[in-house]
Length: 440
Image 1 (cartoon, helix red, strand yellow):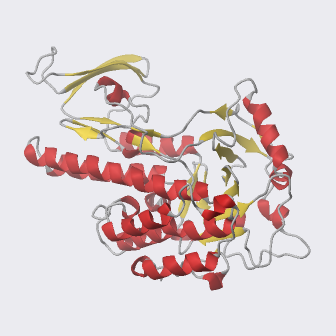
Image 2 (spheres, helix red, strand yellow):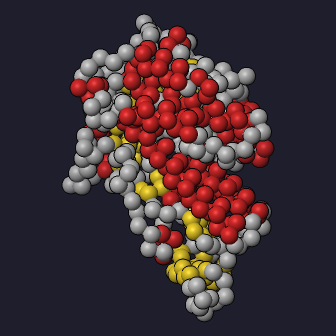
Image 3 (cartoon, helix red, strand yellow):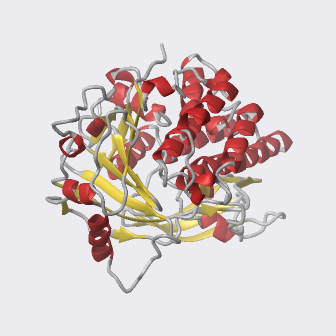
């Protein structure tokens, strides 16, 4: 779910050389500081949502270095001139009169594969994520409308215990889980943040925390490893899962994760979506959003020539990315606002799963992946629902005041309003937060 293109590659390319794992779905487990996790028979402190109909069509959990290596290899096989470990020394744009010492729109110079390169190009795509085009064109970053605010602390580990060993007790069984929980992207959620645990088939587990700075302010006088250990101590069951874990990479820590440039495309240039903006990894949207951007730009560049038609389509590409980043922000920010209460989180997160399953089923049916936007960002009817439910997560949201909100009422409201998009039997209180993949 939200990464179906990766699954197609996994099936067709035979990727035994890469470290990946079939992704059964999304799993969320709620924790309270200082208290061990105690699973409930009604699953009120868990949420499991299946993301694929079968193994052959499953999403993949990639070791990120291997994902990048695979995509790079595909580009090389397609005839792209590729440089490894490239360092860009300069990026120049010809002015409107064709000056600058070169005839093309762009000139990029640098070093890669122990050789210097100078490339002239009529069109430039920034896929770095580092914003080289925004710096060259002096495009400002604009976070004024971005509501999500999080930072991260992470590493890769060996020896992480399966969560099933932690959550299974004599009084509780996981037999009614729709899939093995350790085959999912596991999210530990708590007031002020969340933690991902992603297992690969080579014994390595990627794990990290995304934290709201207001609740968990960054203290640079404390080392990243010490902060990790302090956070583990706050949550006894997570600490138990990582008791024997050994980091195989140095801990990494960031400031605020969110970025958002004021413009993502223009005459003779464009940025991929996650170069233009990034919100948070809570719904694993990064790779899928990027790949959709590749498809869109390939269509624009192969179907149009330089001129008014291409400029119009690039302007629409820019507009759509703006809407998609705004949509992801609303979906993720609403979840952060509901981390205090798993009842609210399990209901609000259905907005994402409705958009993802509906979009993927349209794609499987042969419909365009581009006419409704990523996660239905360009579907006005669905966006009206998202805005309405997100508004409930504002500063006056009763959960923040400690009031009791009935999950059932939220689910019923969402199920009624979003019925046209509910192709997978979501928003069903009778399923008690356990959702197998049920799309035919």
